Image 1 (cartoon, helix red, strand yellow):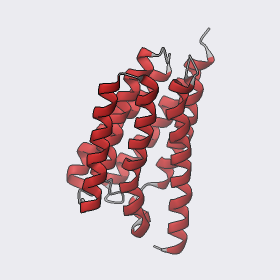
Image 2 (cartoon, rainbow, N blue to C red):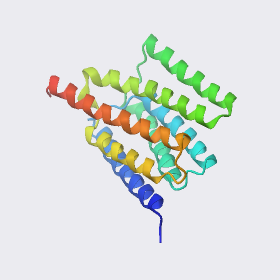
Image 3 (cartoon, rainbow, N blue to C red):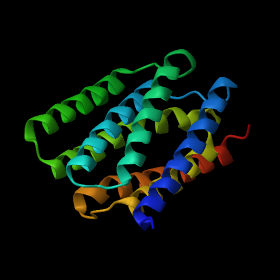
Amino acid sequence: AYSMHFLFSIIGASFQLFAFSTYILSIFRGKTKPHLYTWLLWGTLGTIVTVVQVTNEGGWSILVSWLMALCSLSIATLSLKYGETLLTKKDKYLLAAAVITIIMWQLSKNDLLAIILVCIIDAIAFYFTFKKSYSRPYDEKLSSYVLWTFQLISFALAVKNPNLTTLLYPVFLTIMEGVFVFYLLWRRRIIKK
């Protein structure tokens, strides 16, 4: 018999793959313009979270975090050709802050601090997409973000050893994704297509 953690990791992985495939199709159809730096940072963060999940016995949730990293890095690669790569001076400062935060984590060797820093970096990474979506809310695939919200709930439920270190990131991301879904709905209500 499989555990509930395994079941939730399979559900989370399924949501991830479905959301990823709809997002990729939307990119190729020219409807979605992913922001390179958002997805590059998310891919890096997903890799860090996977390492932390492994060292903290995250169990089957590792499958979900690994898929998140792989899918995000794939979208970052596609962003080079199909996405938004423009950075303002302010954006460059935020990107530099994210890189400095990654270095701070590497120097600290503290997994909880790493996850807190990852949450900060993730918020910085999401800033690029929030900013772009303010004026162009149709450049993001809304249904993918809805699916990713459910994927993240499954990710949190898949954690084998639930504690602050293993749950903070999936809970934080669930909140961020949910806020972004409502943000897109709000901006689309204001800017009709």
